[in-house]
Length: 64
Ligand code: F3S
Image (cartoon, rainbow, N blue to C red; front, side):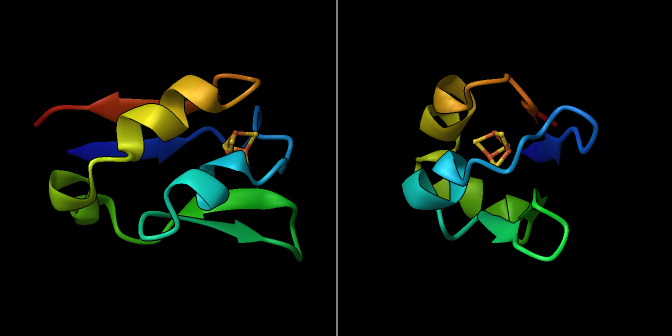
């Protein structure tokens, strides 16, 4: 799974980190979410929920 957070779209709301902290981390210095472990999507099963709940649809999931 490839996980992308569009840095131009992300507003730093932090919902993705709340839902899926193994994969997303909100960098409070820049106010944007970073992908810390895309491979974790395979087993934590929360990436889809994070994508669906991002209010600005900044998250893209790509099956490799
Ligand atoms: Fe940004 Fe969306 Fe996460 S706005 S902090 S990518 S939920």
